[in-house]
Picture 1 (cartoon, rainbow, N blue to C red):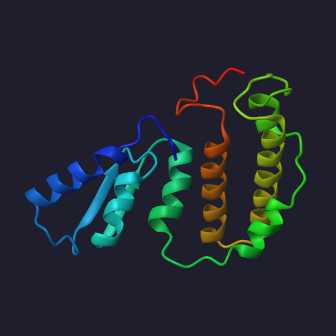
Picture 2: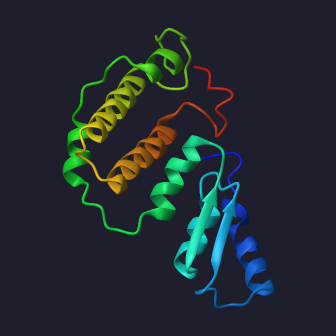
Picture 3: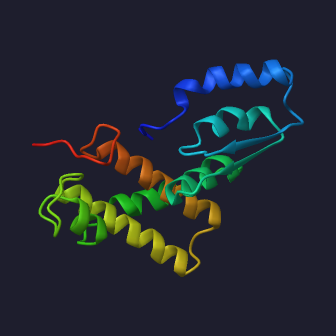
Length: 165
């Protein structure tokens, strides 16, 4: 995710600092990624340590890290993604509050993309409520939606302002 506060560019420095203080072999270490955000640091350490614990107050961070850090299984998603991608857009929260021609007439997303995000989000939640998805699948799909929405947003990493036409 393209996020202005991401520690992705610091990951090598943080890794080098941790290994110089602790040791090269971290396989029996529990690593805590406090203020995890997008989880860039936790993901760097995940294959190298016994366990990663991530923490952040933001819900988006919980969703990303629930998928990237906690998920240890292969998720069969092709069929689910095909169904989500075939949905027609609907007017929902993202369209109304963050999209062109919505109630707020903001330009974070195009009208088409805002409606598509809403349709996908509603479908994922419907699947969750009917127990159609496992927890891993649910967080994988939510994470995928967040990452995809970020890629099509009319912003330059900062959601405080959208790009003007």
